[in-house]
Length: 146
Image 1 (cartoon, rainbow, N blue to C red):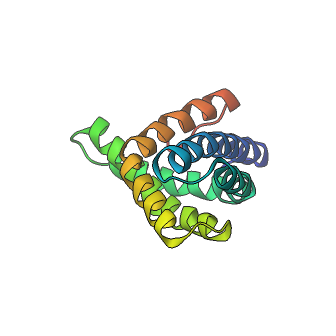
Image 2 (cartoon, rainbow, N blue to C red; image 1 turned 90 degrees about the vertical axis):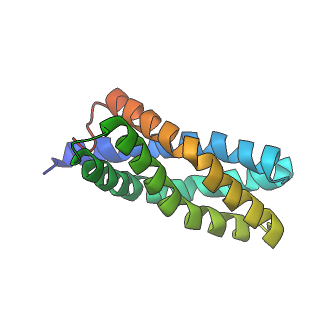
């Protein structure tokens, strides 16, 4: 069980990681792939900040569950960890992302392109985010799934 201080540090690390990563990766996808204007993407990214603040720690715990499950397998630890990161990211973030896009006025075609692109790009993004999250946790002096 985490102490109150460790919980706050863990929540701060997870929040910092998700806000920074989603702002940069989301804007790149929205502008470069889905064809949203810079203004639409900036609105989406700014709206995503409070959303990411709310979901960061629950997502971190959700992801840790996937990682712990993957670690139970005696084979392919590296591959299973990466697959767990990918599945956790896509299954948690896609519905949240679609809601953000809808709320800033993206049309159906833009939403479908952005969410589908995000899901495809998440094959790398989810894994990269997992490593970024672990790096941020180390910076904040907290541990994750271990």
